[in-house]
Length: 239
Image (spheres, rainbow, N blue to C red):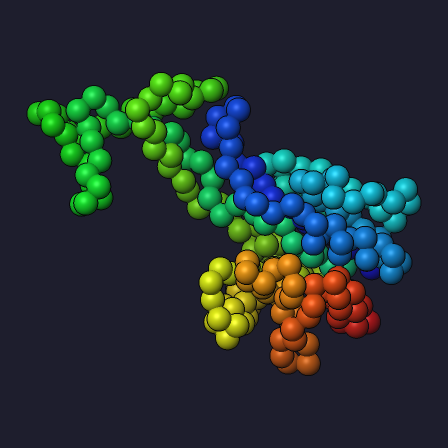
């Protein structure tokens, strides 16, 4: 199979020197990519952490690094719309929000901690000043960052980019029971029209994950076995 795998985190720029990101390092995606290559598949790995593995020197292996949300979006769109992919394993921890501006309260404008609202001690209305710059000044008493919803890249695969192959989605939750995790995971899988879901919790992420549906249900898989179990499921579905 020709398999596209995404791995790692995305950077969301606030200005030219600051960004938002998350804690994920791309090791899971790298392990899956390596396993896929070892099983004879053609692999394209899009990763924010190319140092996570030693890349094979082989015509069946392509690795492209990315940094920002926009980088990953553009690479995924290009690869999918070029055609020829049999499966996409979307393992990357993509930012849910993008920076929509950075602001400072105008003189006399204050935030009320109890009411969670803005007020002015002047005769004017509360007002925010746009502080967007190449490098936001560090002398402001406080700054407020506006976040706006980012497109769900996995939902773009089928709805916008026309991908018709096998699709694997990943879902991570924090502080939930297993039955809650599985319910959320299955709803999420159906929402994205994914064929398989890998679901886990932050608390258990190093030890296990749920993979499914396999024969109509989710199976608990130990972390060292995840890559091979997932690829076997894809191979069986691809025929």
